[in-house]
Image 1 (tube, rainbow, N blue to C red):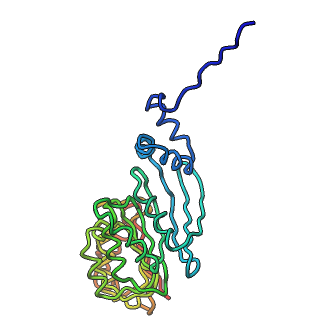
Image 2 (tube, rainbow, N blue to C red):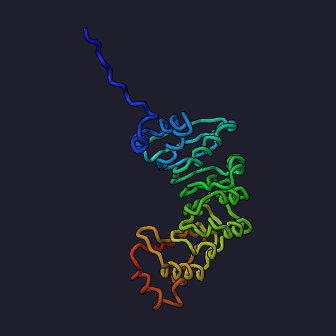
Image 3 (tube, helix red, strand yellow):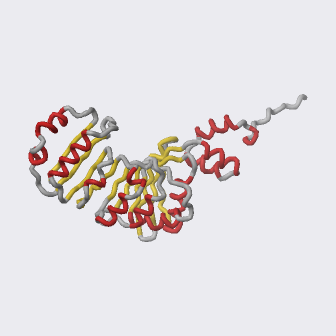
Length: 276
């Protein structure tokens, strides 16, 4: 009686790397991270394969617990973790430090920033690959932790949303940072008193202003009309004004000059003034 011969199954270590890369790209988010922990070579392999995280949301759930919500764009997945404060920042830190991981949006509460900065301070060389950051907590003011956090971001971070109040001192510090100067979109959704000159470099701008002078409004319109870089549906300003303002005052002096430019503005330019 002849003995059945079984064909040997391929061993992972013997598979050519180009095929390993294709396999890793098919794995879900958790499987990649498990593989990454198997060996040094597997860690290097996983790190070569791009992962796009749609968003990471870090919020204070309870006094001793932090919620971390991760939405992965490719491969598509959703994860929710309720973690103790002592370990939560290690989790977020690992995600933002893995090579070839791109985070499209990070939402983090002001109260949690100091905990995250403790981890980030141990690695000042690597910049986080994040495209947009939303600093959350309308009852909290923009403080030094925000300035320090911006220093850990790479130049590819182009958009910021700042909840709460920002005083003139913090605004001056933010305005001097390279990350601020490289930003294309900035939003302050809560009522503030801000100098418009800090925002004229942006292509998209949303501000809630307690005070807004007609001269500033005219300067803003002129600046956006003459923007060198225009992108469809992304070059605009939207200003919420707490006090009433006569729109006619904005264009009174240069009616004949500005009105034709506004009506014939380049495609993609949206100019909005909203009054409370």
